[in-house]
Amino acid sequence: MAEEAKNNGGHDAVVAAQGHDHVEAAVGTAVIASDAVQNPGLPPHRKRVTDLDPKKAKNAERGVYSLFYLSIAGSLGAVIAYMAIPIETGDLMAIRLQTLFVGLGMALALLAIGIGAVHWGKALMADHESIDVRHPVASDEPTRAAAAEVFELADKESGFSRRTLVRNSLIGALIAFPLPGITLLRGLAPQDRNPVQLLKHTMWAEGVRLARDPSGVPIKASEVTIGSAFHVIPETLNHEDFESLSLDERGGSETLLDAKAKAIVLLMRLDQSELKELPERKDWSYDGIVAYSKVCTHVGCPVALYEQHTHHLLCPCHQSQFDVSDHAKVVFGPAKRPLPQLPITVDDEGYLVAQSDFHEPVGPSFWERLK
Ligand code: FES
Image (tube, rainbow, N blue to C red; front, top):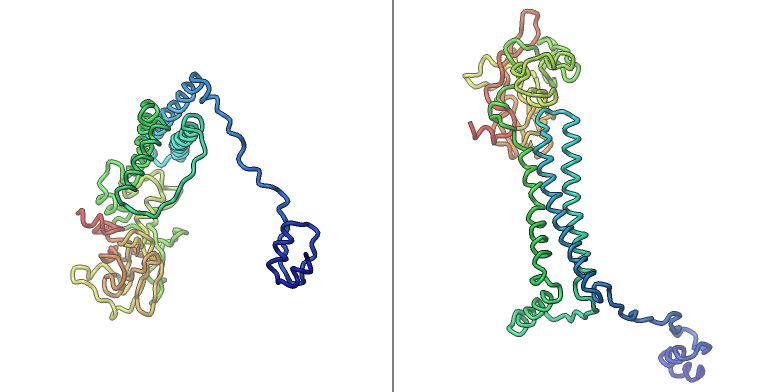
């Protein structure tokens, strides 16, 4: 037979090799060895205890709806934890506890829905092999009728309509699960306080010295050379004294980081002849030195890049650019209003000081529109 295969070409050789282990095939022909392991097929179907014993089926049903109720409890627990452990004070322990319990509640809610659904499928839904015959996607009448039949059959076999407790508890669990997510959105808004006032009032006040960030060393006007840029904080913003300041002196901020985030400023010196100042702000600069909020008016990133040559400040988040020589107006990007300017002057010792707080809210323009 091997000789015949040589003469007939590869096909016969392949066929021959499939039937006999010790066949000599022509050189270059493919040889398909017979499978080492036979396909064992499906194991014989064994009925589940819930198929054989109605009591066990009832128990399984109880287990399923208990899990869905547990999920509802988890979701509500997360909401209650959010409300019961407020973190508005910035207390680190409160933040940890709230995060822990909200997380545990949501995890329990999701886990219980998952386990309940799996348990329902494994213990109560029809247990047989089925073949999913695929048809082209079409919406003609017979297909729709067939689909409706499948749904009816699935409904019948899963007991979705019949087992009302299981169905309703699942619907309840699915409705309750998004509640913690919606509740958490509240944390994005300032709590019970006017955001415009919060962003308008910072630690800057008349006579507060401009200091380097982060050292807190006050800056003399003579140290600011043309072309230089300083990252600036109020001199009063330091760890030692912050706790002893009143809420008003802290600019309405509870924590040092919040106070710093609002009060942070960029200081630059330009040639006086290059400054185009608005008439009402003529005395807000000192000898070519100008100070602007570092908080971008788009969505609040720090505007940290200064290009001395063009006098442009660049926000790295979405590339908004502000022209420092022209009252920090927007020259490019999505920001909609200039950076707020801090009016400055010098004190008797030559240190740069603020004339007042900002005259408008710092940060994103959204608050500006609420004025
Ligand atoms: S936050 Fe500055 S450009 Fe978007």
